[in-house]
Amino acid sequence: MPAPTGARPTVRTRVWILVLALLLLGGGATAYTLRAASGREAAATGTADPGFTLDAPAAALYVRDTASGRVARVDPAAPGGRVVGGPSCDRFHAAGGTALCLQRRPGVPARSYALVLDRRLREVRRIGLPGIPSRARVSASGNVLSWTMFATGDSYARSSFSTRTSILDLRTGYLVKNMEQIPLTLGGRRHHAPDVNYWGVSFAADDNRFYATVSTAGRTHLVEGDLGNWSARTLRENVECPSLSPDGTRIAFKKRVSDGPREPWRLYVYDLGSGREHPTAERRGIDDQALWTDGGNLAYGYGGEVWTVPADGTGAPRRLARAASSPAVPQRPGP
Image 1 (tube, rainbow, N blue to C red):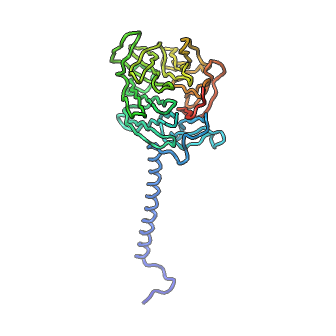
Image 2: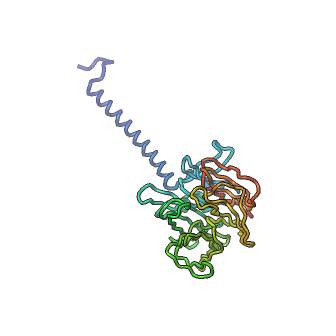
Image 3: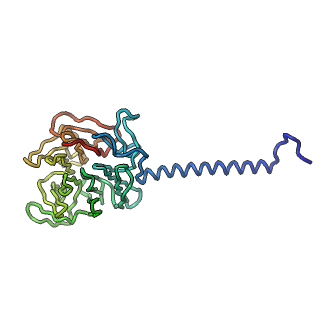
């Protein structure tokens, strides 16, 4: 006999309704999980949000946002003072319409990647790297890139570390995986030693001349290198993480002023023409490769923040961004 109108569903019907509801909920949760995982994977593999590019106004400052690990553009008018939308990077630099993003992936041994990105922050090349990201630099033209990885250790303040520095020429696609074999002239003589380490490359405007730090026999030296002739020569001692000024006349660098492991460096500027040096007004210990934001000012990381100070030794340090590192000015003003 037909069930009366308004009768309750049978036990079997209620079971099937419950099963169907669970399947629908499970499918929605799965879809949500997949979408969330996809978003995390996009950020982890270097994908920027649509519309977040290097095409910002001249002198716009980009940083790595330490809260999210993603690249951000400093904008005082935006919530939190920045727009976060770039790829996830441990180290970042950009110039001339090219960006370099160093990513570290978890695991033993440590594994990292160098991502070469175009002006829209789309990946154009990926290079697998052993070690921990340390330094990243792009030449002013965007044609030549360099990065330094810690092969062993994780601090320049200790003696037990080893670095591996690479140079990539985008014009030819040629990659120098480790520049330790570059012919080195030290004190006017060819130098051969198993303890040679290079780090902190900075390029001149001609995309051929470069400067870097070399360490050997317990001492650090500033070297001037020639990509075309593939050679390097030392210029002076006690220079680390050199950064060449836009006009090519001065080098900002870390100078070791203490033998202790706690804040052993100070930020100095060296004049290539006169050979004279002077300290900046930043008196704290800086362990970073400073950035010339223009012809007269430097930006650098300290204490999980980005600061600036005049390069001529005057003035005082000023905070540019909290919870940030890896400053870059992709469209830097002229000298």
